[in-house]
Length: 186
Figure 1 (spheres, helix red, strand yellow):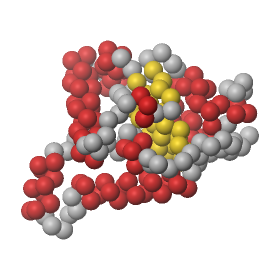
Figure 2 (cartoon, helix red, strand yellow):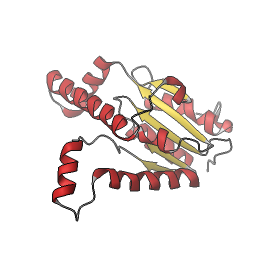
Figure 3 (cartoon, helix red, strand yellow):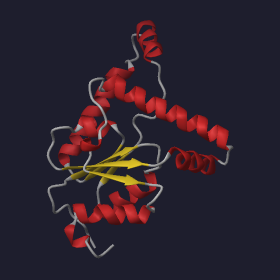
Figure 4 (cartoon, one colour):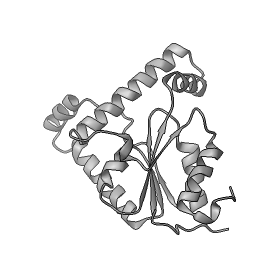
């Protein structure tokens, strides 16, 4: 059965606070026959290293220049509609465009650490360090590209706690928002 966007929501943007959106977001995109973009902000970069690198190697564009190109591409995809875009930058990149369903995924720190340890097969201590680094990188990403913006609950249409909901339940929560005919059919 083909699903189309039959509500004002033409695209879905997902912000992630330490949870793993890939599987369920891909499942949602597949159910909606939409596109899927993931993980733009998780790389750790030092602005100072980028600055020095751009001076010492003028043939290589700096991170800001590259990201602006990525942001333009994301905005064009969002304007085209029928897309699922994963990454916090999407909520600000598409600000002002009508038809976006902005979803925030959250989970308690302890859950995120245990999830990371399980995913990596490593220790709790190693997982905690990775989660902490990811959180710091996420904060730096916001500050680098949107220094005057804050990530507040009113920035999003809906917030889901991934510690309390399965992937199938999350998809089930969102499909009726995008496709009303799925209200009891998930």
